[in-house]
Image (cartoon, rainbow over all chains, first blue to last red; front, top):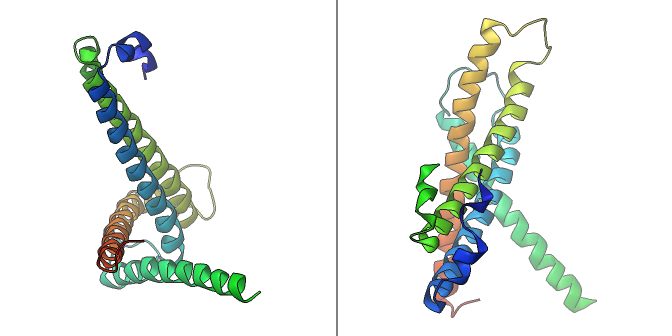
Length: 93
Length: 94
């Protein structure tokens, strides 16, 4: 990976408009990366929960797919429950 | 990586390309790392003197399955995010 493909001199030549465009682009890419990061960690968790048998083929079967979908939704529900409860603990303390 | 050759003519586009490329590499590396971990666990419970044909088949199937699971999680997660965003939008934003 050639990290110096775009030099600092190149960047200083950019117009303000281009700099703004780049900023928006990078913000967007960072959000994408954060979402992908969550997908990695959710896949990690849900694989352990849902793919419990022997590997007998390259495709997710129906049960496994449903389990994975439920796993994602319930994980997020659980996450939300924690946040909500923390909030009640904070306000009633 | 000759796509970056355009850097002198259009640094903005070149920079965008570079960012995208690095993001894609990070994403792929992470997928492979996790997949290796889980499939090794599943397919090679007792490492022998060499990788058997059966272990190899298990590994390639497991790989495909892990990627399938990744895609299923991605669809579900993004769908949920969008639903929540739409709901937040209706109730006047977060």
